Image 1 (cartoon, rainbow, N blue to C red):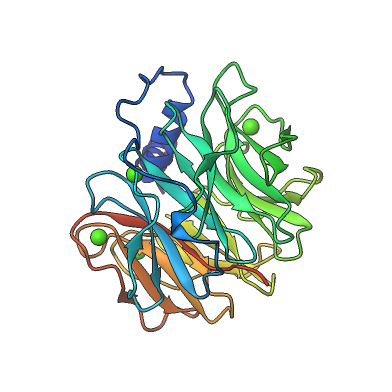
Image 2: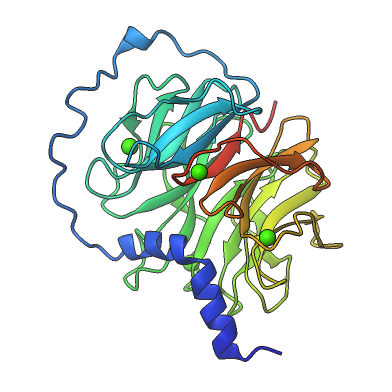
Length: 321
Ligand SMILES: [Ca+2]
Ligand SMILES: [Ca+2]
Ligand SMILES: [Ca+2]
Ligand SMILES: [Ca+2]
């Protein structure tokens, strides 16, 4: 049985990426960006927004800085839609498939941006002085959930919800420990998230107004990155309980957790296809991060990004209809 020290070390190792995000919440001043996007025209030349069906948005470093890419579920029609020299990451889709919400550092600190799904009309909607991360669009299209350190002097984080135009942000968790990675349920009534409030990162769920938070995973290992199935019956997540990161699914009340990837490489960040029959996820099994797709029971795991630079954070469009 691992000691608490080993558990803590494992937790920190597996959460390196998000820990890096949190450190950005520490108020490190980032110099004003130089030459930010001066050659990029966000105007209407890309045309009106069109709904993107059965596309996967993801973060890629293949252009030397993080960009939002989209591709179809077989890996075809791949293109860079953010196309800026700064870090662009953590995409999520509007329910109508026409827009993508994402995080960018282009204004000096990670904030939440919106763009058409063809890359047009990129704009900052959070306009926060602190870091904002992991946006999740509500199924009715009206709200964006995210996590931020904006209200806490100790730089820990809470889950927030704002209107989809960035107005009216409010803190849903108000808890002294870290709260990360909100994910709306398909009926809009609940938000799943990751929290450290019981001493080890677990998956929690609360009502969409922040009431009634409860722990769904209740174990001493690291669980994170919740994603609801389109029918709301199942939550996929990432767990290190088998000593390497695997995709698990559980019933929406936390019962019946089972490992569906079963591969010694690190597997994380699940996202469901709109029909609930498939999932995309990030895997490091080929030596760098790649986007994988599999059947929802874990069969037919295959690499669809196939690039030596890191590809991660998949989001399948649209999650809800
Ligand atoms: Ca970029
Ligand atoms: Ca908190
Ligand atoms: Ca694995
Ligand atoms: Ca790759």
